[in-house]
Length: 186
Image (cartoon, rainbow, N blue to C red; front, side, top):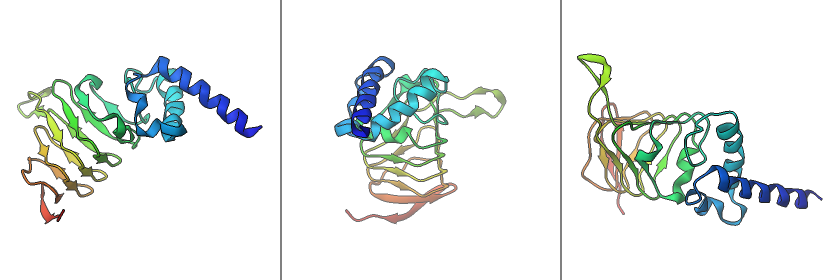
């Protein structure tokens, strides 16, 4: 009886998900064979679409995430897990954030594309794209500032503030401001 009820609930979730979310996004690896993606959808439908947290975002996200402009964030559908970590902040009003395939973003990470104007704190500077190439890992409580480009395989240590781009691949950066602490061998 429990299995039958579970199948019925899953079928209902799948049907209603196509109404609430972009169909392109709910097809990634997390949705294969009744994967964890359907649990995200079930939780997110309640929190996003009924209670109204992040209602405007067309894919399932954790209710504590902030995304300024979902149209300006680009990611592979297999990496929808990056939007399930609590407390992340994606500030991208007039610039874009690109998240490469296989990148992992830890909880409470901030990725911002524009700072406040230091001469007038009520305004922002012109936005600059942030690009995280394939296979990056952004550790918990890190901040990525405007215009930063991280090459393939870059690991950002927890609590780091990344103020500039790094041109090398497969490196570990950490600190405030972040600097290279190790080069990973492939």
